Image 1: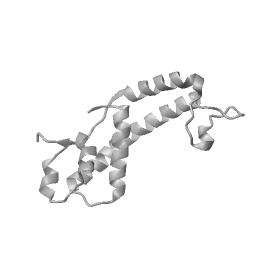
Image 2 (image 1 turned 90 degrees about the vertical axis):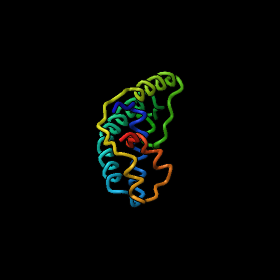
Image 3 (image 1 turned 60 degrees about the vertical axis):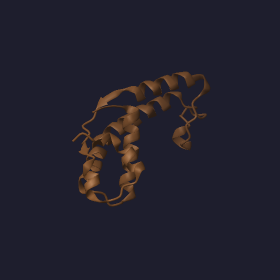
Image 4 (image 1 turned 45 degrees about the vertical axis):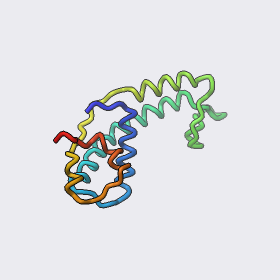
Length: 132
């Protein structure tokens, strides 16, 4: 499935949050969550590394010339670099990558009898196929 880096980051965060809830889900759904987590994780890491390189270039620096976010954790783009930062981030987030998303039929959820919150279903919509 082709996903933009923005979608990769969003889906990775959502799946991570769902997995960390440690709730009971149907086996096939849980398997799809784990498999998709593992497919998205390296790509999410690549996006983070590229973002950090942009931060190294455009973030405000301390008196030693070190990007201040490394010490404070706070992103503060130097005003003179704001346009380049925004352009670079947009370009980074718009890049598309083929990701082997494990898709399951939505019927698996219906058949399980386990109630799943609508927000979780929404967040996992990319991995559910209603046409199986």
